Length: 219
Image 1 (cartoon, rainbow, N blue to C red):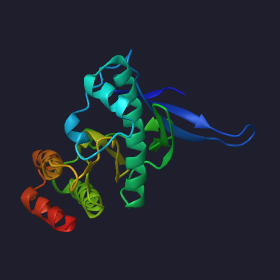
Image 2 (image 1 turned 90 degrees about the vertical axis):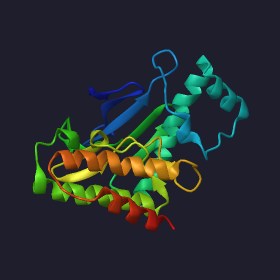
Image 3 (image 1 turned 135 degrees about the vertical axis):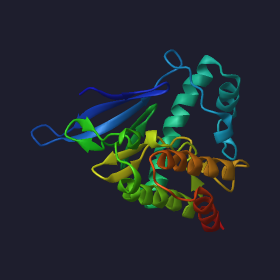
């Protein structure tokens, strides 16, 4: 039913799933591009602490061969689906994960009708008008931390604002803070990225205090 979003690594399509003769449901299909259509560039730093079972595939990905790039696309799709499932179980507001097939992740469509919810970065609110959104973002960071994870790439551009409800998207790089040597750095970067945006919009807070509280939840 059309493309919702395009990116360097994947496109998000709007689809309708239905049994013939019954009302359908709109879903988002995130399709990672294959080796012929993508310059896949996910940082290896996210992969620290993870393992790939097939050693041949792991070597191909490391060497960045055409086959390796194709494997990487499927690997990130599987990683995103697993991350969505973990986040959903942890109580993080994410699109409900439906299924993964090869390089496609099928999930809940967050929006109104056929229009996707806007990113938080598009909000025109300022100062205390953003307090509710800020509290929800801190809640998202806390939910990740209690589960032992950091988003790894959190920013106002991958937070959707659905009529005041904040939903986090783009999770393939989710980081296990204990297993990844740079885990705390990723967590700190998440805090700084969102804190900087809120501060520029006139909402005063202490990002160091937020980070300290999150670290306390990890152990």
